[in-house]
Image 1: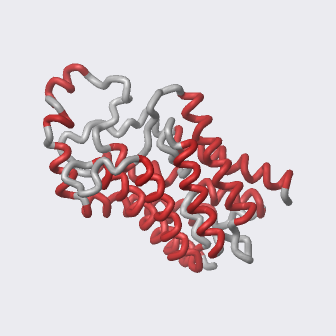
Image 2 (image 1 turned 135 degrees about the vertical axis):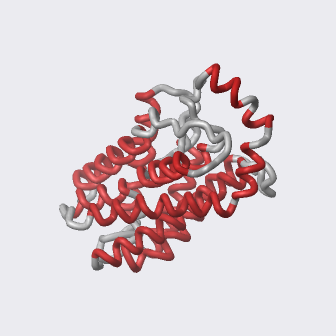
Length: 261
């Protein structure tokens, strides 16, 4: 795989991942959406199908890492770091593009949601009172990135590490293609189901980012978009869904090298 193939594949794949994954959250959360209140099952399966679609679409181009934690895990496993910056760049750009497309697809719903007094209340009153126990996260930030239900830093970090270890270890043990550089056809299906399982079992505390690009890219887009009454982007929490998955990916590779290599 050339550097250009890797970059293009990761941009397209991660954009599709976030478009479909963020899209299902928007569908469930936003006012005037036909899928509003469809629930957590819809979100977890939607993210699983997003992974499946993105991997099938771009596996032949870049190996479909679509996740810096997966890239780090594979690099540690193989001892090859040459293309890691290219993967990271493609993943972050793709995640931002996917989040932007979610905003386009749900533009009217975002407007309706963020101008509804039941959702945003009195913005002037909120500005005086300041942020509460949600860290200043705005009412639609969850469409773009993750946040904890209970803010306990060590627990939130541990949850992201544990979930990512499960994901990356699943990729390394049974999901790689014949060249070992990314997800194969069977690996795409396995990984999608693993993502669903992680969401159902471990997603409750933090929203299971398990992917630094998936969280950071859309959070940047949330901060930049002209959304009315959007509130804050919760930057005080933003390091956890970046650091946690990277640590989890490295731990998974260490476990693989000790137990399976």
